[in-house]
Length: 368
Image 1 (cartoon, rainbow, N blue to C red):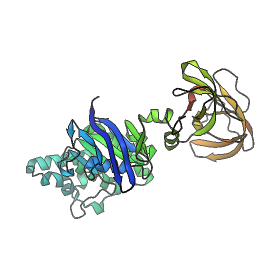
Image 2: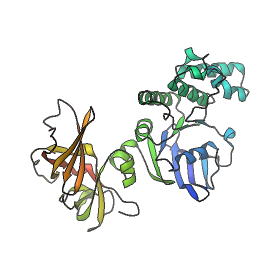
Image 3: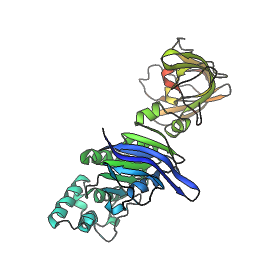
């Protein structure tokens, strides 16, 4: 895939605050790409620079080889769907969608067919004559998307597109957005602070922190192989342990001595030297619980503990287990076919175990 949208060493400051700090990334044509991070990480500022509402202090923004950096918003083949949808309250649905085409002085027939096909795409044909105030939140959002797509932009920017919706509607709109993206094939760039949203919507995600990009990867790679503690914590839940590399093994594994937990074998995730202090991560759902010690093999990391707390979440149960000074979270799926997996009570002594492939070193910021 060719780089279609390129952000090349872009920085932006507001007074002494460096909101975007030397960011470079590229998005392929037709991709669904997310900028993900906490409030104040720079993702919205980056989106506003893509839209043309802010000018970078340095760096360039290219689209299909054309330099957009100095172009005003109306001259860019880019449209934005804002968090509050920004619909015209005095115009009905049909007129809201037609607005951009009419401003471009398109022939009447082209306006009519363009709006009608967009109404069909977002399944609002029967609501064409309603005002925005007569629509639900999800319907208003679909009008905003139709209005932004009717001009056939090369890139659609979506700023926290689901923030204003309640949970059930958000889940429904995730499916809708995926279906719309598949049908129109336009490049979508989402800005969100919600990792579940980004994971569901994106081909790739750039995780941002304090104006910089920490990691760009497919959702699965970010979850399974985070490159920093920040990414590991921001995407999903994780157990972290600090220890010392005691035995480097071939094929990218390392044995790490952790006080009170022995020496688990984990994926080294890069160059590691002997006696180096490392931080490693294991996801709660990767930890198995048994009442007896699992058969000891080279490929099993096992250590005992006592169940301190249990939280029931419907489809799964969360356990907090004390092992010496450590508090470990384990998560078990609830199923009548769980194959002899125990559901221990509070105060029960259990064995926690995980496969070496399920634990990995995460490099700490500023080194290992």
